[in-house]
Each structure stands twice: as structure tokens, then as C-alpha cells.
Length: 269
Image 1 (cartoon, rainbow, N blue to C red):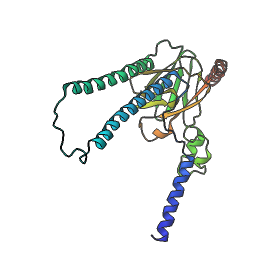
Image 2: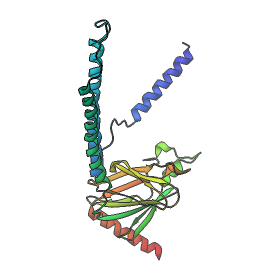
Image 3: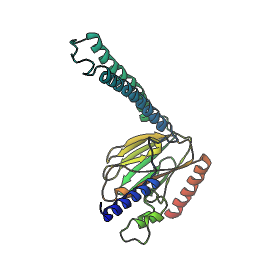
Image 4: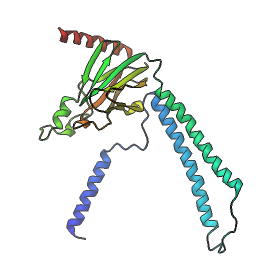
């Protein structure tokens, strides 16, 4: 092996190690501070353990058969044929497994899709390439676009390096502000092409389709910043329309509403 090739391989290994050190590896789906997120995670883990149990049984029988019924021990093959009872058993068991998966999955889906009993509503309208948020009860509406620093850093030949921008491509100029511990219904649509509104911590995503309204709901239990992105290829700047949801206490939310209303009134004047 030439010295040049050795150096090349060493450089590749060091690069991979650097990437591994920086990567945020996650071996499972995230669990957010919402009922829907926990419901999805709980069913996911239930299904995983069902699959693990099936794998143990199947591979156990397979390896047992390989070891105990190999040709060296049984040079003459067995002469048995069909077994009605056994065929019924291995037909009934998969049916029961499917029912055992279908029932909790259906219950979780019903809970996720049931948007009744909402305490407040937010209308989300997607545009190329930004989001428009409207609070019907509060009379507030605004656009949320990629923040100035990220937008500047993403430009070809920019003097601002992406690694120097906090939350690069995941920050906005105006985040969506919502109160915690309140059942919020989202009405999601689009003004041009198909987009998708997705915040991983909420446990669901909804397509934003022109002329159609999709509904989702969430009750956020902890204050914090929850980030998401458009997950439907919607054109040239698809990668540059992030979502930022800021969950605050009821008092902080009321203060934000009052400030935003005052700001809107000032702009209208």
C-alpha cells in the first residue's frame, strides 16, 4: 500500500471521527412534552418488543432445527406430511398478534386525530417559503421567516460562516408563541403549493395543501423552544422555512399578546 493511499485513508478515518464526535446520535424516536408524543412513543416501544419476542421465537426454532435436525444426525429425512392442528396454530397466532397491534394503534390514532375540546385555535398558512400564523381569538397575525443571520450565511460567497450562526437554518424572525397546559388546535393549509408543518416534539406532522385544511392539536406541558421544519419538498427554498414554537406560561403569553397587539396598532397608524 502506497504512502499516499495510507495518508488518504487516515484522513478519511479522522474526518469520520470528527463527524461522529459532533453528531447528535439518537437510537430512538424523541419523546416530547405532549400527550400525543408519548402515545406514539409508547406504541412504538410496544410494537418493538412484540417484534423482539417474535424474532426470539422464530430464530430460536430455526437454530434449534439447524442444530438438532442436521443431516449428520438425521441422514434420512422425516416422512411426515401436513398437520392440521399445527397449521391452525400458526395461522391463529399471527392473527392475534395483528389484533394486539391494531387495537392500541387505533386508540392512539383516534386520540391524535381528535381535535375537539380545543381551548384556542391557531391557523397556519404555508407560503413559498415562509409561514403565516393567525390567532383568530386574539386578532393577531404575522409571517415567520428564516432569521437574518441564517439567510445571510446561506448565501454563496457570504462573509458569515454557517458554523458561527446559532441554530443555523433552524431560527426564525418571529416564532410562534403559545401558552403551556392549554389544548391548542392547529388549522393548517397552504396558499400556493403543498408544504408540511412538522415539529418533532409534538409527535405529528400535517400536510399544508392548497384549498384544504388539515387539523391537529397539542397540549405542551413544559415551557421551552421547540423547532421544526417544512417536510414536503416545496420548491427552491424548501430547506429555508423552519418552524420555531415558543411555549411560555399563561402570564407570559398574555403579556406577549398585549405587546403584539400594541405593535400591530402602531404599524396600522
